[in-house]
Length: 383
Ligand code: V47
Image (cartoon, rainbow, N blue to C red; front, side, top):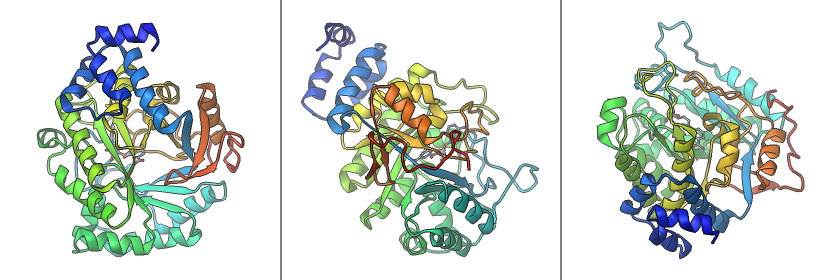
């Protein structure tokens, strides 16, 4: 081990943890708290990088995807959210299925393989609207992967359709649903939920949706929205609940931390997490979530430059081209809405990593040798 790192680990009292990491032993909550107390990011990043390289070598994944936020109308009013609107608001929107199909068709022609579809909890759409949405999008191409509806939306659709969650998932799968995105988890602690999203479904309900989906053979991602009113202990509890469900089902493909964005919401007096905070959070997630194959740094909410640095702090996935993003841009994100495949590949290569174009299940589509090959997205990623 590099003597500077060894000294840093020693000074932070992390030698025992480093030995466990080397032995691929599981870290407990007290050890996670010790990692969160450490201030030597260099040493933390080095440790997380050991795990990243053991699991994924130098490979760094990216995907040609498009996000589609079908409506910002929402029956909830979460304090952290800058996206949700009521009917009376001038900037509320709802896409018709024809508009969604047109957007998807444009992006499909440019090489995307995945649509990431999420929106508010719409006040009046019926269940069959969502089924028709999936069916008509799938009809564009059976190979187009539909990653759609957070667990919170699934619970809303179950309520709208007067069905059990299992029946809801079955119906949506039959209409074309391929996987679930990880949004809506926020922080699992009920104290925090009561403080920032009163009335939203509980941790147990969020976890149950993913459990049912995994048991039926489905895959999903999971998230943690951090950097607002939660304590470090509550972050660790959140990670523990995800790790426990992953032990049980193995259905999560990746963990995606979401740093809080404070603009235009009811928590805007809270400053956004710093770069240091974001990097150490990614590194600690990599160290603690030993049963996850992938940790994703979503470049939209971390910035591409920090995302690039994260590739040596535990991260092995940057998400994708995205094309159109509203949730973070309404909350003050200063990143572009889209990234070309060429820019992602350049960022990955410049960080000394090997770009791997992946599909939604982390199967390789084309790798470093071909770089951005396969994408016909122009340089700014937009159609
Ligand atoms: O569900 C909303 C969060 C999520 C804010 O699964 C906020 O691969 C920070 O889940 N500040 C949507 N976070 C984004 C999301 C996502 C993104 C990329 C990849 C994947 C994946 C999932 O963003 C919401 C909510 O949890 N969110 N508002 C905010 N102001």
